[in-house]
Image (cartoon, rainbow, N blue to C red; front, side, top):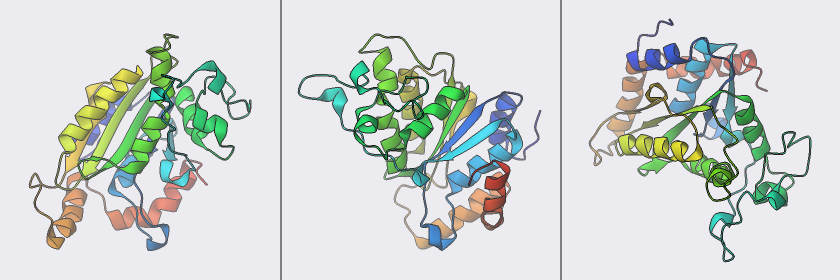
Length: 250
């Protein structure tokens, strides 16, 4: 078992410890020149450090991922994930499983990097921030672009291409709706066909007062986060490039 001072993280790491092919997907962002990192990203790397070397981290804001084209509800009906939408590049789509019109129509789209990493992984955990009571825009764009995985299983009745894989969702927010965001995404990942163990789903929120928008509250949240999870955000930022190098990330 792995020791961590926070019991929630310890529960997650203990569940994952010894597993192979773990994928952590971060979706929150900061302006790169500000030398800052999101709390959810810091948390992902903290967990990754405990699980090394059986873990890979993907940072979605660093990838060029086009918006979903909405083919699941087009005027002709549901055209999402049909065989004609298969990505033709065998280098990008070695399994032949990637069927997404936005990938097909945009040569510089990089969703294939995420899809192939999911196919290779046994356990996938998504990390998100909560913004305006919902997941951040990078997560929402990603999960919409992966809709063909769910659609092939349900509407197209082809069976699951992620059968047996586990998925989790961890989110961090300031003052509103974190519990509901986490619960909704657990249901979404269930719809996709993932196994969704409770140990991989949780959220942290600084306050339950949705009307607390003071500057002091946002500053206190950083201190509370650091005290709760027992690591320094400034320390993490200074070591960020070291973490990425350790995990083989350019």
